Length: 255
Image 1 (cartoon, helix red, strand yellow):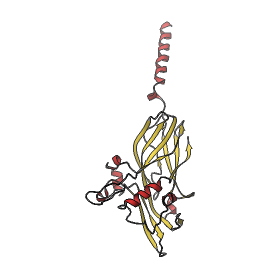
Image 2 (cartoon, one colour):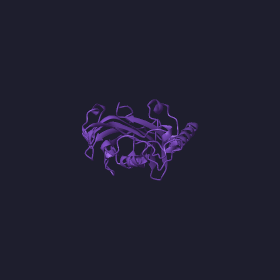
Image 3 (spheres, one colour):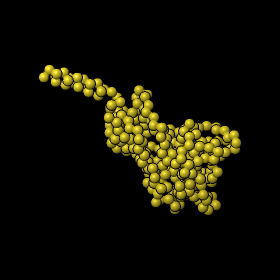
Image 4 (cartoon, one colour):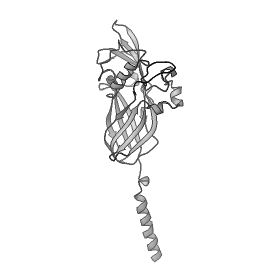
């Protein structure tokens, strides 16, 4: 009986010690669900084709392709500790693929002062080789600095001559001096901060993407001025960088 008592007490002691180990704490999965709209009107793949949306500048447009990459999902605790997931996901509204993304890495529940991700790829990640992005023709030509697009947004608009015209609103790393020795005036990837969140269980973050914002704030976008050949135009790329930061917001958090 005495041996049994000692064994029981030792078992409780070791269990108690192990339960205080953060590495042994239960972990949860995180899912990011991307929902797209035009100033509140839901956009799905079946909305592509007809000219039916009006930009803040009054330009009538249609969608033919809309896809973008997000990367480096980061969970920041109140003490500044960060859990950064070195991941990426190509969201393609055109075919409604990768609209939900669940990283393999699970995290501990708790209070997080910030949940964020990068729109596009930072310069280090942009220098890597991604076979799936290659096969998706998401590359940027070497003469424009190489790497990958951040976003491909294609469609048509009614120009000032009342004719249909194509546009290619493609976001990349801003580049000057296209050719053998391109230069980069500033970074054009940016961080989307979804704000402070308390995570208790497996969680799904709805990320709302208002596509109308790409034409609206802070730069009123005139498609008659900026419509094609925007990749080698660093001025246009910086305007996109500024407008895109208002396009993403946190929707419902489900857990």
